[in-house]
Length: 307
Image (tube, rainbow, N blue to C red; front, side, top):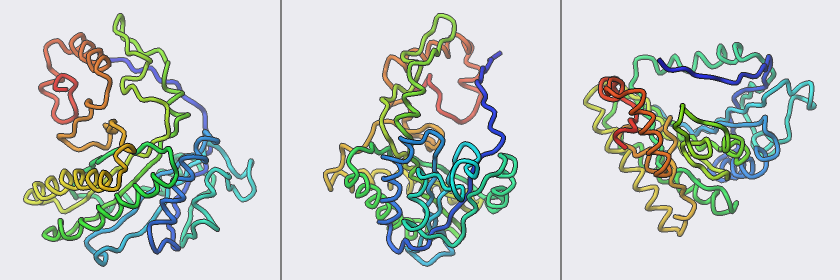
């Protein structure tokens, strides 16, 4: 039996919503806004976070994309800021980025779940894949903005031809930021199981720094014949993206860590963990699953025994 102990926080109202942007005829303004938020917005305001998504699909003109941003602020922004507009999230609003629609407003988490439910309905019955080609270190503004634009051009420049034989597909590229404040708060916490201890409390061993995790998601028709096509494309585009960055001298912006929750099957998620942490996780696995019931009989996932 496994126990989970969670620390909970009472947040009766949050301020959250989706903006669809219009004045981004190229990727430049959108990615510039993302980098500014990563360097300044999220580092000064622990309540602020965003999920940016660049979308396209088989029904769009080849190369045509749309830009949306999920903005979140942990509280009732109307009682704190004029027009519920936290300065930390201003990079994704007028005058920096315009919007055809924006639902950012105070609401309960239940209300937010009801608002987003219809968008998930369109994926019903489709196959779904996630792939994380890399994580970017966010240090120099210009370098990271250039890296994001290269990733954008590489991915959206290839996806239409690579998936041309699929009758229906749509995809999103989500370069979402993780703040050094978030990582610093996670480090140093007690994280032990009996006499088994995870160094620094963080099995991933991440140094507190600003990061951008690049996630690719693909939804497509439920046809088994499409599976190898999608696999070949995703794993190939990962190499193409890294190669494009290296050609521009930006290989130092690539962090070794892959976010497990958005990794695809076959990706080496434990390769970016410190070796001693992987060994500690293995010892925990051996203690609680000595007969390898979960390890061998539970399908899917990334098993530390195989790391």
